[in-house]
Image (spheres, rainbow over the protein chains, first blue to last red):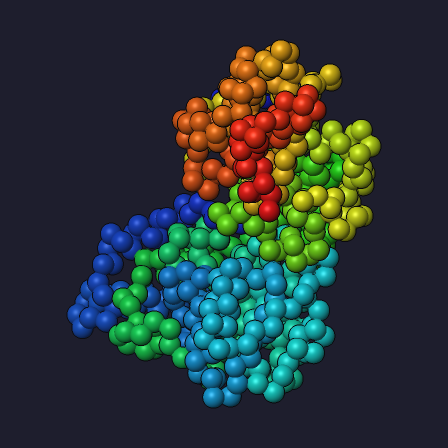
Length: 427
Length: 141
Ligand code: FES
């Protein structure tokens, strides 16, 4: 087994790398790059200026906005460019908190939101707002009934993500949105991980606000969008000039806005075929990993799942060491292990789906993209058992398990569940 | 965050990984910070550590520091091994990223825990030696 791994490590030096972390970021699409560089080369004017260069820039900016609006099936004046998904989330939550403070100070969100929402909610708590963080089930699903039950007289906003970035679970946001409609509450959804992966049309999804980010769909980093339904009152987050209908100050990044528009166009053109293709690769990976590696479980929902997301936990080993070995073998992946986070806490998402910290420790996330191929999946499936075996041989927990001093939390044949929920009861 | 070449080398090619069937002493410690576990096996003859092996459930830094710790104590007397600090282990690896320093504490503790086991069992525990085991109490609280 070890010889095989050594062999693979040597081979990897001369093989192309496999990028399996598309949920972290994506490389700009060549056509997007083309649009962006052309803009930077030829359209340098400030859209607010009163001469030709300015008009040209303003025209290009509005062109990008209307393209995006039509793809999302909303009005142009409902699309606002921001610097990133995090800014959009901050704006939606803090803006709504500010403009509705006289109505109430209660916000509903979930335990598995991205930090851009969670930490914004926590910041609002410090300002005297009250936040309900809804639980999720073991697949990471939020129950629309729970949303309804959490609504109070003083609730001013509900914010639930469209799809989770770690475990890929796609939330029932249309249903949650209709609960909010019924109660006359604004509903925001962080769609950063979902845009470009699944069909998103904010109106159909009953969303009043949605946050998006360019670099998750092959546009550059540094550009985001907030969709805000016309008529919804939202305080400004970035005060300044009259840009973005006076709602978001700062000279517009015309080149990146145009890049975002191009990226979205490309994504929507191929949405169905790409989703189908990636789902097939995804399921090959999930089935292949669980078949080849004993004591492995799938994290997240088996079917209500982003087409590109694989998240598994390997029992008795730790995630960072998995990533290091995979890196040496040519693969870029990520993990929700405590050791990989700068805070040294296990992923809040994995804990929220009820996973014992020990099992969260051995988690691995593989996220596919347009460049992913069957060959890459084959190569991955060949090496992953070697990686896990190597680390298990080093693990004192594996030794304890094999000598009968420790029960396994994930059955040998793997699956979707942890059978002993409390963990090993260590420390 | 990036590891030094030495850390990566000890992670990729860990020295003295495994078990000692007839170990004189063993020590298992858990890391309260991130939840990792390290087990150290020592073979001691005439107060000299003639062999050491480890098993670790943890990150790259935890594996590399265990590996380095075994290298640093093999051939030493138990008293010499007792003064091994996590700093020394980290320095021998050309340093660790700041967030990973706590993993080296785990290596020091594992060695100490095994030695504690040895001194106690052999009736060799003295007040001076006992002083050296403070680190075990500190971080387990
Ligand atoms: S053992 Fe967890 S960070 Fe090193």
